[in-house]
Image (cartoon, rainbow, N blue to C red; front, side, top):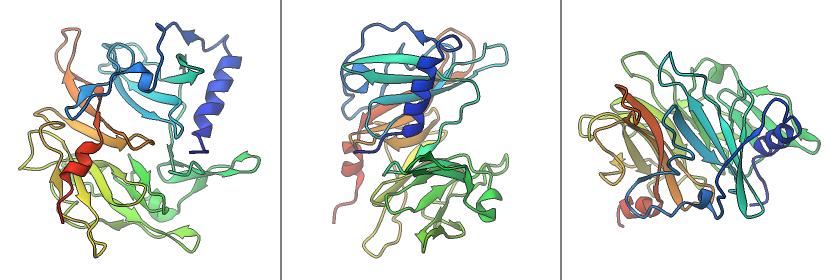
Amino acid sequence: MKHTNNLVVALFSILLMANKSYSQDELPVIKGPYLGQKPPGLVAKPFAPGIVNTEEWGDAGSFSLDMTELYVGRWKHSRDAREPESVIFKKVGDQWHKTVMPTGVRKPFHSPDGKILHYGAKYKVLQADGWSEMKSLGPAFEAIQIMGLTASGKGTLVMDERGSPAGDGILRYSKFIDGKWEVPKPLPQTINTGKWKAHPYIAPDESYIMWDGERESGFGSNDLYISFRQKDGSWGEAINLGDKVNTEAEEGGPQITPDGKFLFFNRMVPHRNGREGSQSDLYWIDAQIIKDLKPKK
């Protein structure tokens, strides 16, 4: 793809120039795609242990459109933990380098063509002279407490909402028609069933939607589910991604790498430093699993 995540590129350049405040951390020599990691095959594996997944913080990550940057967002596991450092891993030449992000920087979701950056109910558009000022999707979007939002190549948005402590939030969609997005509408019950429905991902060609949620038929806590587009345009029954991905633990945040090769997601795992509780680690699996789950004609 010609377009890259311009925000990440710009931030990386700024950080390099402002090395008095934010310096590059030392890394072992890492070469090759995906931070030099061996592809996982059809069983989910932790991504880059000790490099991305850490003992101190929860970790979530996503690649830029050209696959040369990996943004890793981190958060505290407990009140007594020190402030986490979100980082950018950038491939320069054939080697990866790590740079700490400034505190408070928000990571957007970029449209598949790289021309729009989405920040929940707000967005920016790529112009000839750079990114536009922040715009609003509209009052109907502002009224929803959006946690995760994703966009297809056709401009369709799919979003979640924070909901109540009972986990009754729903997933909605909005089509881009005549130069603007429609008022968000609920997705059908094939998708909006169970609790904690969140963190949707719609395929660029709109052939499927993935999300995480809790259902009685699942493996325990939140699992990853997928619904495929039917011939008549409707959404098919939710399919659990199965035991190669889901466990008794909580899985969430599914996304496909921009090159279409791997599914990334998060899993709550026991603390590795012996403390009680769990932490969120980034996992990956070959995207072939999606083709294998699609019902045969």
